[in-house]
Image 1 (cartoon, rainbow, N blue to C red):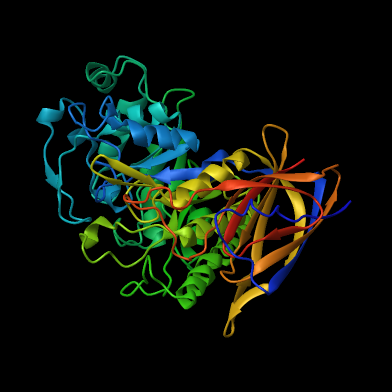
Image 2: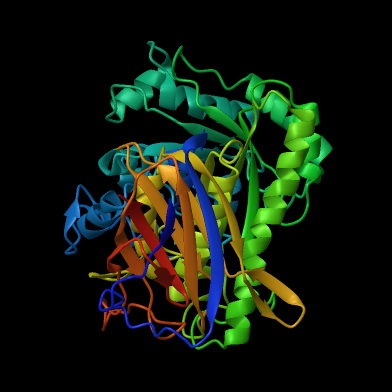
Length: 510
């Protein structure tokens, strides 16, 4: 059936103005042709011991005046539950390869204070350790991704941590866990053997790391049914050598290879770009940089297809997101940055890329959950604010474990100079509730997009869902104005579908 839909006037109440020029977009949906399932873990989060990401952001302690549930911020818990966080990665990141797990167990008053040499040189009290992490994810209803210390640790240390967490017999380590308050073994969904071995995790060559991985993985033993998926530390940005070498040289005890890529507007680590008050040129450079994710994933997947044709190894994008220059009034080592409509669009663009590679990309973790980089939530003592990125996760939660639907998309380009990105990207999937969902993202900050839909295999007449957009490119929520931007209702008959500039739309086709 030929479908064109026009969003009802008045429902674009976030205030974006349709411009005189429109992008032309054709989407042919084959609702009766399915692809791979979009693993819920694509919507994973990352919580590192960095700045105020853990302390104040998540953990305040039972004696805090900030309302808490057994020491965890109640407002943060409730907000994260609302977007159905499926997976949390901890304790790093670079911090993982200097973290010694024994320092984070037992009575908190007896735990040693260390200095976090990676992030700000601040004191690390180890108040949030193994037991606190698992209690946190269990309160969220999420799964656990634990990153082990290969860089400054030992095989023995890592193997003993795994036994401490998963042991079900009467071993000394399992009994120590019980004495510390946890009778039943913890459930670990993923276990990372080191992090960024090419850099902060040890400055290694992939060949050397591959041998170390094989050694360490040999001794990570768990009871029947408790084995996590083991993750090798892979490459970053345009480099595919790590994926290539690891998938060639590790032939057992491996379920996925990690991959990291950050969106820096200027593609320059010394002058990354501003989080707010940026120009359209910086908006475009942000979109051009983030859309490289598609090319980089495709290149890494090609290496996996060549070396692992059976499809046993996943590509886990376990660090991604925007990274801007530090705010001048804050500690640069805390990586605290504001979060705007631009970040929401970046998140949605990446979701759509991950969905297109759902067969291999079965887990990702945005950096990071609270108060760090592209955060879901910002806090200031007792105050909390939800970011545009948070709302994008909430809109896209219908895609968790959804079955992708085949579609073809042709779109006008968004261009500046000799560089271009798609004007619009999309996802189509059938949710676990049986409903047909369409996501649309307009990357162009000035021009609306006219969507021409051709849907085969389903009798649909309306689009019902939500839209996230605003007048200004850097629209954001602040502690003084925490409700400046949020999703609003979107509903129309399927006659003409026009989405405004710089917008994220998720609808059910019904």
